[in-house]
Amino acid sequence: MEDIEICHCNGIMKSEIVKAIKEKGLKTLEEVQDATEAGTVCGGCVDDIEEILKEVNG
Ligand code: FES
Image 1 (cartoon, rainbow, N blue to C red):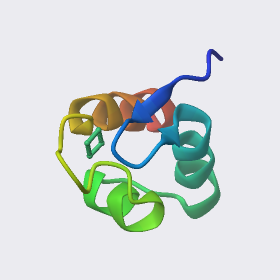
Image 2 (image 1 turned 180 degrees about the vertical axis):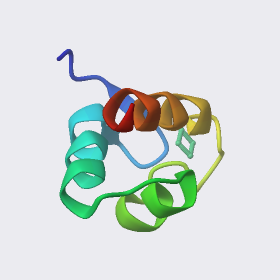
Image 3 (image 1 turned 30 degrees about the vertical axis):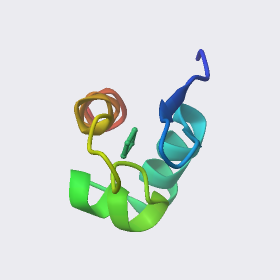
Image 4 (image 1 turned 30 degrees about the horizontal axis):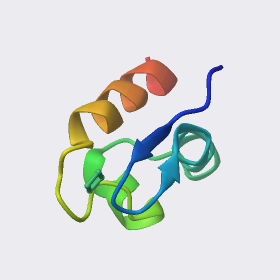
């Protein structure tokens, strides 16, 4: 998997988001925001977070 920075405001990498989703069983954008702080500032990365959720959870 290519690791890229998803949330530029908080410097959160894709690998961190994927890890949190898998380890904590996250299902929603809100849960990812709470767990990682990605997507909590400008909101510009929330579509990417939704994509990652779909990718990991199917
Ligand atoms: S890029 Fe993620 S909140 Fe701004």
